[in-house]
Image 1: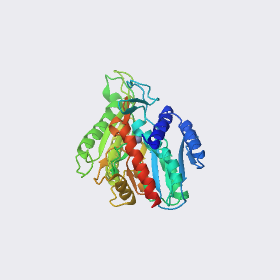
Image 2 (image 1 turned 180 degrees about the vertical axis):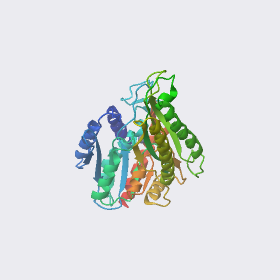
Image 3 (image 1 turned 90 degrees about the vertical axis):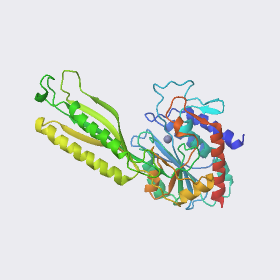
Image 4 (image 1 turned 60 degrees about the vertical axis):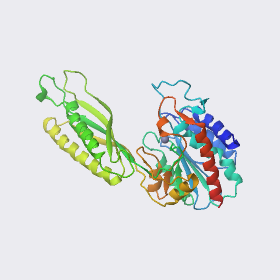
Length: 384
Ligand SMILES: [Zn+2]
C-alpha cells in the first residue's frame, strides 16, 4: 500500500465519521477540512448558506494561474434511516477488500483522495493550480454548489476543467441528465362523500395530473438518444399525501414529481405542457370551488451535462484514465452547473453508483488505489 493510499484511507475514515446527512449541518466536516488545509498553509474560502448552518469550501493549491483543474465533490450523504446496515454506517469497516460506510462510494472517497494528494501537489512544481471545491446539499437538488461556482468564476483564475468525482468506477462520464422537481398542491372543497358533486375531492383531481405525469413520462422515456438509458426524459412521482377519511371529499392533496431530461429544451417543453394541463384543471376546480385550485412550486432545477467532445475536461480525463468511450448517466450531478458557468466538466470518480444510497454502501479498496494513480497523474499533468 502506498503512502497516498494509506493517507486516503485515514482521511476517509475521518470524513465518514461526520454524519453529514443532508438534513444536518456539514460544518463539523468543513471545520476539519479547513484545519487540514490550513496546517499545510492553504487558506480555504467558505461560501455559507443563508442561515450559516452549512457551507461550501474551496481552495487553490499551486500558482494563481488560469488553466487549473477543479476537483469537485459534495460533502453531504443520503440518510441511513430504515436501512438494514450490518455495521455502523459512520465507522468505516473493511471486509474482504471492501470498505463499508455511508459515503464511501458517494462520495467521500473522492474527497479523501483529493485531500490526501494536497501534500504531493504542494511539493510538485505545479504550473497550473489544483482547485478543491466541496459543496453541501447536493443530494437534495444541488442547492449548495451554484453560489460556490459563481465565486470561483468571479474570484479565481479561470480553470480549464472540472472533474466531478461521483462514483463512475473511474470511467469518464461525458453527460448526465438534468433534473427538476416540483411540488403540486391541489385544493378542492370538502363535502360528504355520498354527494360527490357537492364538493371537489382534491385527491381525485390530483389523480388526473398524476396520471398525466405517469403517462407522459412513459412516452417521453422512449425518445431516442444515442447514450442515455432510458434514452428520453422520465418523470416519476416520489411522494403523495392527501385527504382525511374515506367518507370526506378531500380538501387538499399534494404530490412531488421529478423530471429528468437529456436536454434542457426537452424539459422546458414537458414542463410547459404540464403547466398548461395544470392551468386547465385549476380553471375547472375554480368553477366549482372558487377557493380551490392548483399551485405548482419548482423545488429544484439542476442543469444536465451535455456532451462536449474534445473539451479541455474530456481531453484531460481521457488522458488520465485512458478511457475513450462516450458514456452518459441518468442521475444528476454538479458537472452541468460547472459547464453552464463556462468551465468544461466531466464526471469521474472511484466506486460504483450501484452501491450509492444503499444499506452497507461500500467501495473496493482497489478503486481507491486507482483513484490515487489518477490523482498522481493529474498532478504530473499540472506540472507540464
Ligand atoms: Zn453523489
